[in-house]
Image (cartoon, rainbow, N blue to C red; front, side, top):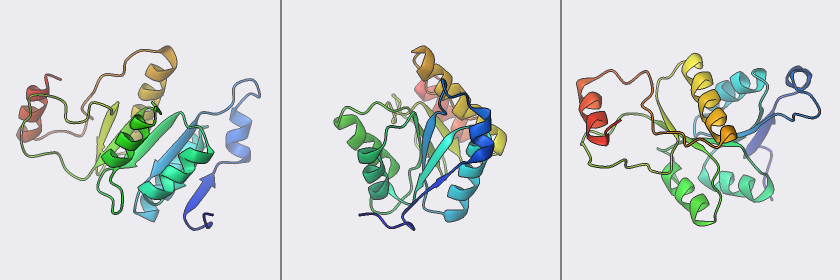
Amino acid sequence: MMNAHNSSRSGGAASAALQCETNPPQRILVVANEPDIRRLDSTVLSESGYQVDTAENGLVALHEFASHDYDLLIIEDEMTTVTGMELVNKLRSEGLLVPAILVLETMPTKGSNRNPWPQIQAILIKPYTIGELSRTVREVLRAARTGADAPFAPPSNWQSPIVSQWCACLRI
């Protein structure tokens, strides 16, 4: 049984007013170690009309997936207990193909010949803006809704030469 401090839900009358009963809000799970990041992302997305649940780590997120269906997962990779990629790999091994946005502290320093995150639809690099979060969520959900493959796309806050070389190796 989960305690209230492990998981929280946000949304309410404001987001409910934005949704039609025949078009329920899309449900997003935000998984982040930092309470302030969880709260900010959750508030921004809730005010945009999404139903948002949060989890403080990958283990709590696994419990959430056992109880609920989600349209999108936003997850930090650098977490204790279960990393973001470990969670995504676990979900994929169980046949759950929920689109995922991976949040990273920094870009990898080495180039690669292939996408190291083939099961991720998008990446956000900290610090990201509210606009970057909103745009990325909209694009990934739109691609999932239309059945289009959401290509791995570098976020707009990738500005360094190292990242440019890394993206070139991925052929992005």
